[in-house]
Amino acid sequence: MKSPITKTAAAAVIIIAVIMILHNSSVDITSVTWANMQEAFSAKPWVHVKYDNGREEWLDIREGKHFYISEYGWRFFEDHFSNTRLEYSRNSDHILEVKSNSYPDGKIPPWEPEIAWDAVIDFLEEGESRTLGLYTDIERHFDSINGRDAVRFDIYYLGALDSRNLVSQIWADPESQLPIRIRSRLNLALRERYEVDYINGEYDFPETGPESIFDIGVPSNLKIVSRVAPVDTISAEVQQILQAGEKATQEFPKRYRAIVWHGQEHGTIQVLYRNKDSLHFLNYFNLDGQKYPDCHIDIPATTAAILAWTTNQMPVGVGVYNDDIIYRRYNVHPYHDVNKQTKVEVHRASTYSIPRFFYLEDDFWPYFYSKNKSLKIITYHSEKPPGCVALSNGNAYYFVDPLKDYISVKTIYIRNVDGQETKNSETSLSNFIQLPTGHWYPQKRSIHFYDNRLLRKKLPPELPDNIDIQLLQEDEFPIDTFNGEKLLEGAKIETY
Image 1: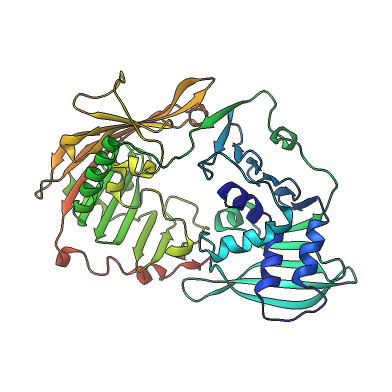
Image 2: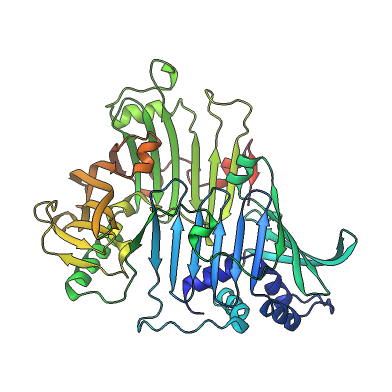
């Protein structure tokens, strides 16, 4: 049960929450005990829960198999025996296979259903889960369902602003020691999409379940594309590059104002301020000049002109990350639906998924997200720029320039289909310039997409960006730049 795949599979079925509650809660309801619940689960081969919004899950307790259908139509299958996860995104032309490298010797221990639930609890107690500490208050109540006695567990989340949110309710039968029903609060995006706050699920315990991912609605003609699993062995040459790149990232200035804007007639403009670990960003739409002349600036434009333009514009999004709290304000643009309400999301950084490239310069060294993977030096690649070192982990190529602070000047993300490499996307950095401190950064960034799903959505195949970084002193930041509470004014506040 040390496999992340197995842990995810077991923890994903909300039934686990009932067990965790019974094991850790100090309230005594003698008709439902930890031992009885464990025994009741072990006696059932399959656990199935179906929600009224289309979400559905199956867990094969005896074999360690987990199947999941999301409300978006995504489908997943996780198998303890093969230590494998299969992922299918709606309308995708392939199935992604991810094999965990949790067992370096290649020996996967047998599935042990009698300790599966203990393992999930240990998983949370070890602090390896992002949700550890998320449910800060749990209440037990006597209740009834259709005239039948039940025990109800109310799970609350304490938000960043000390708000108390009811995120889930689970009803269990004290006689059979099995759950009956679950009511779960959707995340903000799903609440807005479905215009409901909660979804309801009903449990049952069938004798059989799906055999493969194709049994839960994945087209049978799709090919399986494998992703290279991470390993812990890296050559001395690669290690030297990683150390040099890490030194460059640590020494990159931590106080600056940056402007990032699309190099086309209209698009997005982003202004960022960084002061050590604090971040403030503002997103603007540069709209079509013929339709919205008041919200348009001609591109190319100087950074001074862009800053002057932003002073008279409504940012569509503003964010502040400071003191481990993330604030995100979404404004209602004058040209958008005036019936929508300006809202602010507030999260604790410890329980919120921080964007992969949280700071602008993180994008310059993307290979650090492969630090513990099978990075190797590739001696030849037809697209390797002059003077660069090519690194690969099987999922991407990173072309690192030692003369430009070991920045990856070109990154190609790939996938393998029948042994043939196919590009997903390519990011190129160019027009390098040195800051007064001597550190390099690119003034141009171009991202080219090859994924058919993006093309079907009519997204542009290439997104060119301009980048300007201006170093600042501590006293040069605008007043209240990193005061997230200022974003709360006049907005609906969401803490979950």
